[in-house]
Image (cartoon, rainbow, N blue to C red; front, side):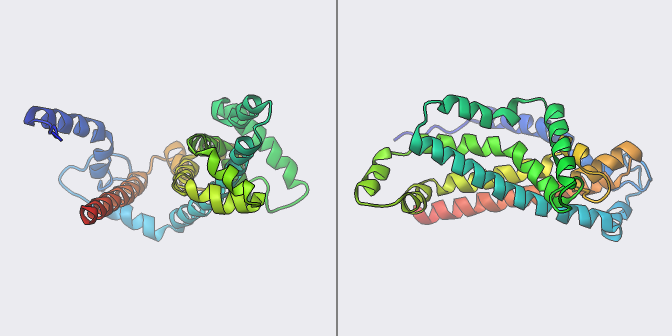
Length: 270
């Protein structure tokens, strides 16, 4: 089989396009080393003061770990609910499946302000009966995030189930397997990679969520994106550039580690 490899011109154009797309991210790096108290490119002197501020100011660490906690809980809840919904549609095949799917995907297409206001009033109402899942609590933020990110998991799981051969479910059913056995031992193992992808995607979406978070939090549940937004709104703090560089480094490290792992796995397979 003939393998076509890109020529030098194609590689050069691809490299230039990649650099152009990465320039907004790369430009943040020198700004994070500025010795000034405002956003600026350092002229001659470079400083680590803003990286030290990330360590010395406990608010950054608290926001980071709060975002991790909210993201893990929200992604797990959203993926579980989306999987249950998609499985119900796939197994039962109700008459109004299209309508139900449209309702499930409504948070994805509704204006963010409308969703934020709805969740705000919902959590305010919950605050009257409990203090855990309520307005300005991490559990309330996780619940709101799960509502916003669940449609993306619904799409992923529904697509995976649409490509699954129904005959394996019918075979398990004909052999006397119950619903729980068919779901947990037949269907879910065949879409496990999709479930992992849904967990990762929803976690990233929850981590990046800021629109709804601004409406449902005040002073207690301050996630990292909200803290960064406060730094830009109230005082343009160069520490925001420093935390951006840290997050970029983490993402690049994860991508490179995954790439090297896949290359190593492929090399062993060959």
